[in-house]
Length: 111
Image 1 (cartoon, rainbow, N blue to C red):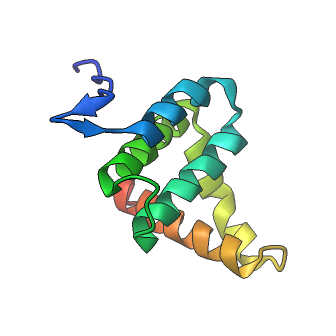
Image 2 (cartoon, helix red, strand yellow; image 1 turned 60 degrees about the vertical axis):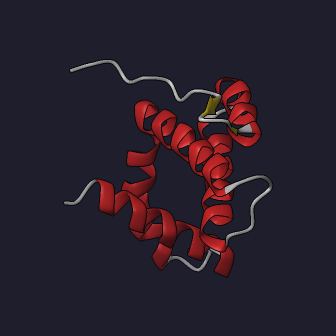
Image 3 (tube, one colour; image 1 turned 135 degrees about the vertical axis):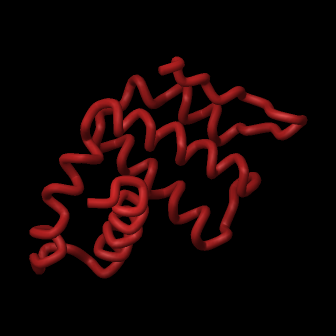
């Protein structure tokens, strides 16, 4: 299996300042902070509200997703998600974010 190539900071003239910012910061944040940052990127992509470009936010999301998969954090979130969704502790926004990420996770990792 070949090693995963790092995502370049600029591809075909596309600047990626959001991706670059997360690439510089993700190793200094814990998994919870990186997960929250990934949720923000998912919101940008799904709501078409970009700081820069769709591509930039997609690349930032991919960077954070891959990191959280390597640490096992996404798997742990998935295993606890059903109980969290059944609880009354989530706001409507948190519930929507968790639903979105579960849809993505279950699409990538079908049972």
